[in-house]
Length: 182
Image (cartoon, rainbow, N blue to C red; front, side):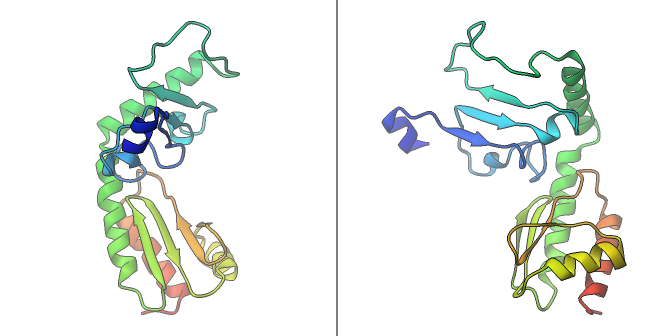
């Protein structure tokens, strides 16, 4: 932030994957205390309905015609986005992501044979000392657990914000079973 201010550079933060509560705060950058000039958001903004947005600092004066977009002003997308915000607030999903995410991180860090567990909220990476392709396939085919990947040795968890402690514990049970951990 200081470097951008000193050089007159606009600070743009990408919250497309990490925003809307995924990390246990509404935006991931809130952990740092940094205030960006522009924030990009999508994915969680309308829960799968095609929509993205650019949030701008009050230091910019919006001007009619300044931004053209394929989906701009779509009434259905805007209604979906407003409904998402209502659900996030009424169901306290940001708090849930923080609580359940911390539970998962704590439980994963207890497991032997894992190189590193890192993450915040419900954005978690499990780094192994070996390629995880076969492990992921076994989790899907044998345990009915879908995970993502980040690189060849990292299992990525990005569960929904509605994940419960019980569901997290069920994941842990299946994950440990696949790793042959009692």
